[in-house]
Image (cartoon, rainbow over all chains, first blue to last red; front, side, top):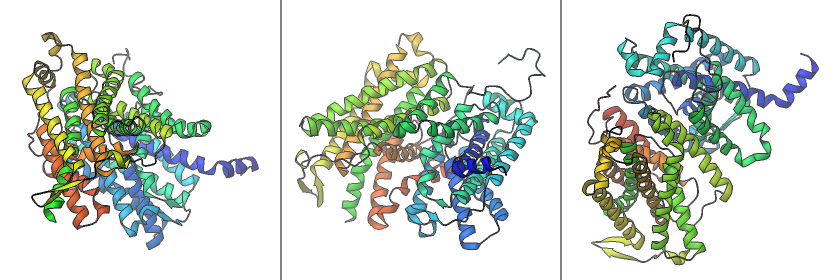
Length: 287
Length: 293
């Protein structure tokens, strides 16, 4: 590795890590939003992944690749439990229920000695690194690019634009919604585990409501027309605090303002283009 | 002791009920999920505290002014953020996301402006005396809470059921597109409903602030999360359900704190929320709604 790159990574290591982790989280948010659903449980799913991985590594000593499989399964189970009843109802219910689950888990972590209480767990070995994080992100992006161009991707887009119509032309709404939420939870869990294994420390405070809102703002800023939008949003909103360092306490104010302005004036996000159907539509603008 | 616990729970539950009522009215009539609602709770408490501390107003006067002020802020935020979405007939989730951003903005702005430390009403302002009623110990603050809760619920029922404006509000909940054709100023009515809801949140904030005598900007965020549990238990948009659910959650919380552990108190609401979604997603008195195109 060239010396200047080495220096750069040494100085900005944690920033480089969080860029990748936030990219993965944005991707997990994309899966849900792309179907027109809203989950505010991404931080909670991330937390489940982080705690699962930390406990497996610290207490069981499980090999890391196995841990990464486990951290996708546990949040996915959580998503099944919360998604199965709520996804049959209107979209508001999933949003409210996931907020509730996030809070309940936070209280569970704080009140249970196994999870280290309010202080969290520390001394997690740094098993993950740039290769793992960006490898997962790249795989995720490639998979979603292909999914977006497939039958599944078109079904998701139809659901986002008009759920009733999508259901009427034969999209199996409950199955897609639940499947999407489960996949999204698995990705968020993976991101949480990778994050735990680079920062070596986790605490309940990192998986609260604020974190859920921040993850949502990644996707809203970038736009959900393609999987690249949310990742771009994550990159901007992760770098922005570094640039806005003089603002300190007002960083969250700026974050909030971005969400408000994005939804009101830029509902399609920064990256407004959609995947691969332009050639099939001569007019192309009948939206 | 059990009866005392139940009574204390009932008093706390009454404030939850008022809080949830405002949110559910907003959702039922305007069709928006307005997450800034929790902020009006904090705002009411902070304004009342400031009036009592800085201007030496008696508690009842600060209460009234704070209630009006929170209502005004709610109407302002609604017309700034949601008019545009209503006009575009945007789905509920759009309102949820816009107000989510606004919530983050409002809380972080207020906490960076005034800090997050817990503030208290001056001891002289609160009448700490208590009396015995049927073997229960009732403090003056608790009496104020019960009285205010009855007054506000009664006032709201009167407004909605027996006045012309109430008729328009019910019409708006039923058919938002049609009321403009019937000569109702829909924009003004939306602001009025926001005002009423916001003032209910502000009132709940002042009352909870008095009850625990601990006030800080983020108290509304915790309350909003608890409010979701109450609202879902009662059924989204169901006013009667919100009242009953508020009382239930308040009492169960107090019992949990008394007989299990106070650290688990806050988990009660969320456990009920998940349980409701599994067993009875439409809420306590709910019927399944059919979505029309």
